[in-house]
Length: 132
Image 1: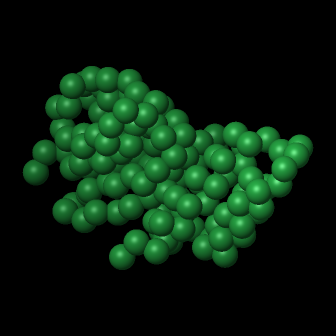
Image 2: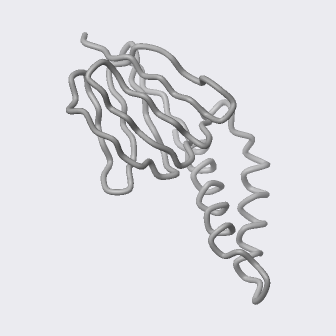
């Protein structure tokens, strides 16, 4: 089976550096399925679910915003954050969701964009954690 090198970086350093068969990721415009020899492109990535298929097995991740660079010789992802299902602290995610919802209900003095992004991140983590 053909593979390509996938490198994932966060502000904390290199998270992933392996050969994979497929990457499924949500950009601002589309959900992309990236296979070996994909056309080169650069795209902004949304906070969403990401799937990596490696050795015939699919693994899901909750990812934060970032940049996708598909090159001739592989893929580089620069992400705000990434967590596998096993890494997600579900209680923390549920608390973050509650805080964000409370802030969005408050009439004054909140950063709506920040609270909305926090709610999206929390819902994404919960979704990945609860996905069977």
